[in-house]
Length: 503
Image (tube, rainbow, N blue to C red):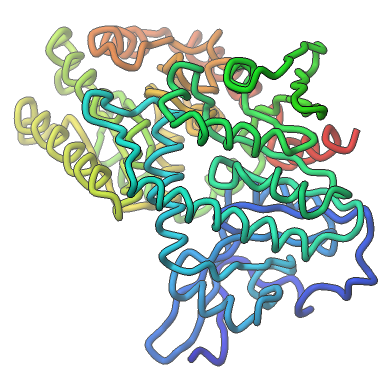
């Protein structure tokens, strides 16, 4: 059993232990719930637990609040996380591990977590919202799925119960994402005094796609989110799709109030709003100027030489559309041989969800297609595709800095922060080739080159136009893209949600 801890990354900012006594909690308390928390653990052979604090928009956003303002409730994702949760005895983690934040990590039974996370959230809800199913053969909602759905309900109930225990009277709770879509209604039943919000970080499926779900389950998901006082989305497109699902499947009344929608059903009203998460420009610029990024930039430039660069940085998530992006680059070289030996596609494809067979197969296909392009077109001194599959944030930032063209072509994406981050750091300005199915297109489309993510020839033509874009135009577009991309950085995004929920 672990008996002591170590912390990596950010030094601890507080040595205070488990959360404040119940009597000290106030109505100003803010609780956050998400599947993944702000800290994860690794377990050494000698039993030592090492905490690693994470990043991302939610972590950055929450930093806008005082450390003592509330508790972050999350799930234990690994055996080491579960050991840390057990050591906490069901309370909050050691604050020296969490940067001073009160974090309650739930030790949900492994079978329940796996069924909920892999069996429902990532294999069903994610596929529905991103429209990834091959409908002749999937989905199949059989008895095995029904069993997994029962576990998904238990997983959501565990969060609702923990939030109900942690919350002071009249506290505010911000529930995050599709994993926890049932929590708002469950929590409303347990604690009607709370002010509850839900935020969806994914797209929302149009009605015909959402109705792939069995009707009772589709209704349960919608009613779960409608248990919130306010639900929010990354773009109006996703918010309106949710509202339409409520209208068609629940018979709900949807009214437009300009700055928000309102959905009335069964005697209650849920307000619907939009907050487009932006890039943290100040953080990106500071982090990208550090020596480790300079070193990686020098190595990449030596590899690329004086050629133009098309950069993409993604996880090997099915919705990111990496394979079609590679095929479009291949088509560019076929249709425009003048680019042979004059351009390099720097493609970072970091493995994701490798516990699911379909993701492992997709990751292998990315590598196969990249290798085939290099075999077909490469020469002794020119490698057309530079593919990296080992996650390295500093190297990603280095690629951002050297990008002439950014390729962001997802099938569907709630937002896509890479599209917002690259223009902030591109040293010569970059031309952005952007899928119209990315949420970011709503904000960046005017200065991007629009592509249909399924159209290989069209994407190749956009890459060609991007490479030909005059330097002055590229720099001016990139400047406007960066301004739009950083309009609502994480702290402002989080506080805007909070203020709207409390209004």
